[in-house]
Length: 85
Image 1: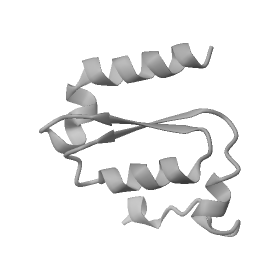
Image 2: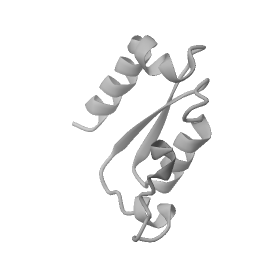
Image 3: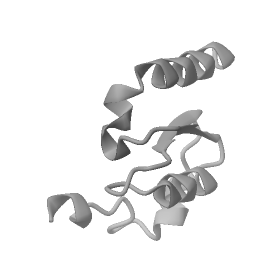
């Protein structure tokens, strides 16, 4: 229940309005088999933030993919950090 109650727009406008003001580069990682945080949610975040980059982790492990697919996660993070030095 707690995971579903957080709203970044609460008291500040719509989620889209709030996220549109994020001016720093953002790397968003989504897992193609994650049902806890479906990829469509990461896609929405990326659409709302002007400097966001969405990278997709391919895994059959669902939400645990971020733990098990360390090589993919590391490659995306390194690439993002190097491109924003």
